[in-house]
Length: 61
Image 1 (cartoon, rainbow, N blue to C red):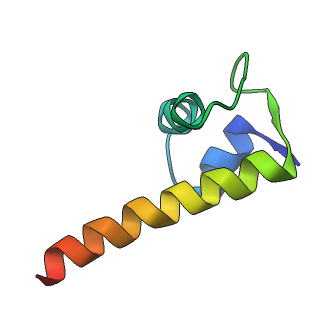
Image 2 (cartoon, rainbow, N blue to C red):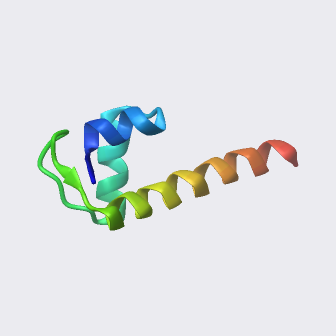
């Protein structure tokens, strides 16, 4: 488990980007110090990977 701020640093995204993903995925938070559960982190990881795959796939066409 880690805070939103730590997670953002870990994946190379801004806190604002991670908060936006939390809202999109229905993950509740108060601020950047909110602790993410292991489930939340898995959901975020999957969403970020899906977005990166989409961008990469788009460029290859």
